[in-house]
Image (tube, rainbow, N blue to C red):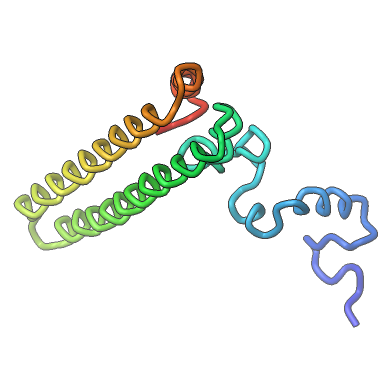
Length: 161
């Protein structure tokens, strides 16, 4: 049988810190724990993420007071944007590997490094075009007052596209 002092960093159920741990990890479970939860993200359940908030759909639905049809359309737009960002991250990792390969040889492969730079530029342009298209689709989806609130969120940095 294990004693209460089985591991120096462990928190026993009777310790004063047990309530804090219980409160910190309830309501979000492991997903919240491993995604960073509220730690360092600020803003409660909207902590930081790729859009500046951890749950951009929920955050925008709340801040812009979207109806159900708007939420459904926005979910489709954000999903496409998330997919393109993931693809851009894959391209970034590939170009880093190619840069390392160019530098690893006996002589520096300038031609390869030039190709990698061109690939990186194309990937960034493709991502920016997708962001612009998504912003246009979001604009068309919103009413005038909602557009003003969206602009405010972008200007203040609360939402990052």
